[in-house]
Image 1 (spheres, one colour):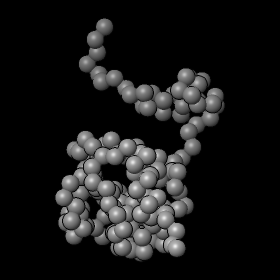
Image 2 (cartoon, rainbow, N blue to C red):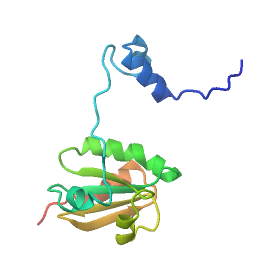
Image 3 (cartoon, rainbow, N blue to C red):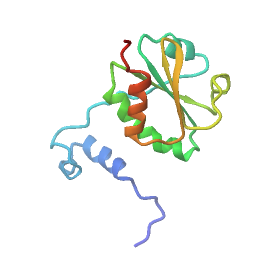
Length: 150
């Protein structure tokens, strides 16, 4: 039987079932009766909030420059969310939509997306352009942002 409605993704099914306290969560490797813990999502930054949120941040910041139409940006998004959760309290993760905020990416010389720029003490200390696997992004973040001064 063919339906004209799009198929729900596994994540959508998971969210719908878990939030209705269904035992089917167990098939998705979640403990029965438990819902997913909230993750530290990246903050949304605009041209107007960039100085306050990024350059004045007490913690190092990774800024993900992205757009909704960008395929590689969609591939980076879940990795950035995972890293934001894993490095919570050590690094702030932020997102700038390049379609809605033209000034900041232009000023910083962002020529392709996704671009992740690393800031420490308000200064750019590194950047990654294009999709990279999680291990490579973590290695770059550790090298550029989490190194200890000697």
